[in-house]
Length: 168
Image (tube, rainbow, N blue to C red; front, side, top):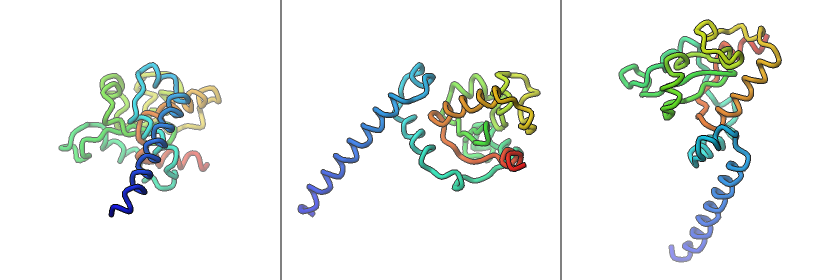
């Protein structure tokens, strides 16, 4: 074991240096909203995870299944997790008090793609699946939000209805 100690210490130092370099890179390239809210190493880990995990490895959920994740309660059968969807991704916002306080009552367990595209809090823009009606400018808005969410929230799945619409 003593002959392995220098190797293990060197590996540990190398991993620590790599993690620090990634955090520095992440801080320099992160979405401006993240810098305004204060930099978090947890969000660096989230961004790394969401960047390197292949999309095909995520489970697919329907809007009906997504609705099971609207209440942060183990009694609701969801393990206390809260999800919402946008741009086809299902985001885990369980750890975000800001989301739950400001948007949770409207978006938790629902698809907010249209609401984000139109910058609207109207109920009529929640869970809409006629994505083909969005303009290029509205898609640009959605994609800007997606870049932010990829750095802030864990991706937990893909929305089936979005995937089906995009295939058409």
